[in-house]
Image (cartoon, rainbow over all chains, first blue to last red; front, side, top):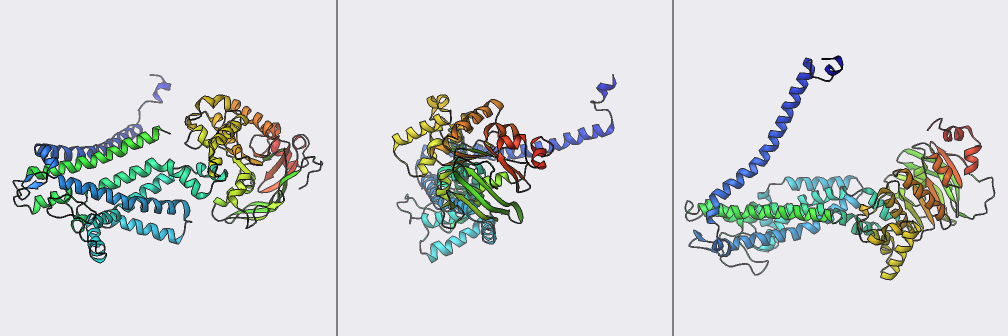
Amino acid sequence: MDAGMNRIKHTNGVQIRRKVVQGTMFGLFRISAAINGAALLVVVYFLVVRGWRAINWTFLTQPPVDSMTKGGILPCIIGTLCLSIGAIAVALPIGVASAIYLHEYARPGKVVRLIRLAINNLAGVPSVVFGLFGLAFFVVYLDMGVSILAGSLTLGALTLPVIIGSTEEALRAVPDTYREASLGLGATKWQTIYRVVLPTALPGILTGAILGISRAAGETAPIMFTAAVFFTPSLPTSIFDEIMALPYHIYVLATAGTDIEATRPLQYGTALVLIALVLGLNLVAIIYRARLRRDR
Amino acid sequence: MMLRNSMQNSLKMSTEDLDFYYGDFHALYGITLDFYENQVTALIGPSGCGKSTLLRCLNRMNDLISYSRADGKVLLDGDDIYDPNVDVVALRRHVGMVFQKPNPFPKSIFENVAYGLRVNGVKDKSFLAERVETSLKQAALWDEVKERLHDSALGLSGGQQQRLCIARAMAVEPEVLLMDEPASALDPIATQKIEELIHQLKDTYTIIIVTHNMQQAARVSDVTAFFYLGKLIEVDQTETIFTRPNLQETSDYITGRFG
C-alpha cells in the first residue's frame, strides 16, 4: 500500500478507538429513539388485542346498560368531545393572546419574567390539583355545579401553558424581516401581527392547539370533580349539564364498577376508543399543518 | 457637511448633528448630511461604520430596537421626524425601505404589492389592480409575473423577489426610497437589473443606498458619503470621491487598502 492511501485509513489506535466510540454512541442514540417508537406500538398493540372485541356499532352508539356491564359508551364519547371543544374554546383565545403579548408587545423586563415564571409553574401543577381548584373555584365558588362549563374551564387552565408555549414558538419562527417589511410599508404593529405574523405562525399555533386538546381529552383527574359523573344515560343538552367522559369511565369501570372482571373487555374497548380519538386528533394536526405549509 | 458643488436639485432630507446609541454603544457621531431630490446618495464604509444605522434612522426603523436612542435632528422637507408629534406609521409611508435580503411575505405576488395599500385602508379592487400593475412595471417585473400574479411570491427567484420588494415599497408612493444593500444577496445579472432599476427610479424618488460594493456605489450614485467608525468622513459628488478624494482615509478605503 502506498503512503497516500495509508493516510486516510484506520491504522493507529486513536483512529480505531474513535471509530468504536462513534459507533457505540450512535448505537445508544438509535436504541433510545427506537424505545420511544416501541412504547407507543406496545401500548396500541396491547389495547387493540384486548379491546377490539368490545368494539361494535352498539358500543359506539348506545349508552351503558345493566349497571354498565353491557351496552355502549356513547355518552362518554360525546362528553369527552364536549370537554375537549370547551377546553380549547377557553384556552386558545387566551393562550394565543397571552403569547402575542409576551412575544410581540411586552418589553423584556421584570413583569414579563414574572408572567413567564407563572406560566412555567402552571405547566408543572399536577392535574389533580387543577381538579381540586376547579371544584373549589368553578363548581362551588362560582356556583357552576358539576358541569361541562366547569370542566372545560378547568381543562382550559390546564391546557393554557401548552398553547402559550407552542404559540410563542410559532411566533418566534416568523422571521423578523417580515415584521420589518410590514412596518416599513407603514403598517401599524397590530396590522403587522394580524396580517403577516399570525397567518405565518398559524400552522404552528393550530398544531399546538390540537396537541393541547388531545392532552385535555385524556385527562381524568381535572374532570372527576368538575364535570364527569359515574353514570348518566342521557346526553347533555346544555353546558350546565354533567356528563360521562372516556377517561373517567375507564377509571370507574376498572376500580368501582359493579363487576370489574366482567367489564374488562369494555374497559379496554373504551381505552381503545380514547386513544383512537387522541391519535386521530394528532393526525388531523399533522395533515392540517402539512396543507397550510404547502399552500404557501 | 455641505457639498462644495452647488446643487440644482432641492433638498429632500437631511440629518443635523445626529448621534445614535445602542444602549451604551455610541454608533453615530454628530452626522450632518443632506439628501437631494432625484439623486442617488450612496453610503459606503467598512462593516460597523454606522451606514446602515444611519439609513435606519431615516425612517425610524431603529425604534424597534429597545434601549436605542437618537439625538439630533432628521429633517424630511424641513420637518423633524424625531419630533414627539410625528406619527411613525405615517412617516414610513413617505420613506419606504428595501432590505438587504429579499423579504416578500408568504402571500401571492399580487397581495405582496397590494399590502401597503391595504394596510392604508384601500379597498377599491380596480384601483388596487391598477396600482399593483404600475408598481410591478416600474420595478421591471410585470412581464415576468403577469401570468401568475396569484401564485406565491416565495416561488420567485432571489432577483425577482427583490424587484418584487421594490415594487411593494413603491406601491404606496413614497417620496424617499431607502435601500440597505439591496443587491448583496443577488447574483451579478440580478444585481445589474436592480442597478438599472435604481437609475430609472431616481427620476421619481430620492434614493439613499447602503452598499458594500465600491463599483456599485460608483455606478449608481450621484453623491457618495464615506463613513468610518460612526463618523462621516467625507461626502462629495461620486465622481470626485472615486477619482480625487479629499482625505487619505477615503482614498485608502475605496482603493481597498482597508475595510
